[in-house]
Image 1 (cartoon, rainbow, N blue to C red):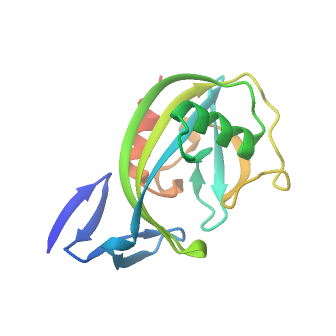
Image 2 (cartoon, rainbow, N blue to C red):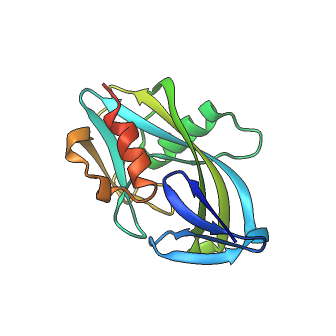
Length: 172
């Protein structure tokens, strides 16, 4: 059995099983061959001195607008589509890639085990109005809110919290 450190979380990996978090934050162990590659793109969307966060329906913790890329979609296309679906924001300028993380994750409601490459982009907007919970077109995103980075605690973040917290606090 081998233990590897990936993206700030410990995963026990052997030839047959991977130990990872599910969407409720619980540790699960699943067969290696169940995991499928999933590139995902997320926006650290800034407006003034605040960033846009959402809460996950599964555990109520903070996450960010974004999600998995559709076939043949670029990161930019994915990011703009996901932000539009989840937030209603159309006016977004992508500034820079902030970080990439590799993460094993299991989404229970659909029995999806993902070997995810996560790309976090710093973006800016001047648009203030957001979708209501009833208007959000997403299985997990809810409760959109503009927060200052200093209002976010490490334990508030849904997954990869140490790495993401550090990334957020590196922003000027």
